[in-house]
Image (cartoon, rainbow, N blue to C red):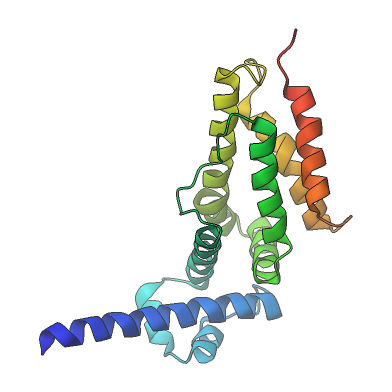
Length: 206
């Protein structure tokens, strides 16, 4: 009997966890981070708030894990996994355009847009949340860019004296600026143009 109960309990826990993540992301999109509460998440998920507190110490911890889970699922849907690197086909421009186009699609997805804006905004006034969000999600992603640029430097496609961190910011910085301020639409053409312009500046000096 015990062999059949353990999987059932595991499935129930996973269903509850998924319901909590979905509820947290929905609420932060609809009402903002400040108005989202553990009680509200619990009610939306159909679980007791003590269930949430058993797994997470705070609202911020729930939302961060929910967002990381959302990002991981989206990456899997694209055929990758949580540790996917930027492709290295030998064509730096094509590789960067591929990943920036995928980033544009993600930023334009309502499932990402609301939670990302809420967490980014709260991170500006809550240094602890901002640091955790950056450490858990942003820095690993930026590391992918840095390693691809370093590989391009080794291959002679990028100036060896360029700081990879500054180089990657030429790519992702304008994308996030346009997204955060809603100055103009985010499109694949825009992503391609960013890559073309950035690579002109990053090209090896004659």
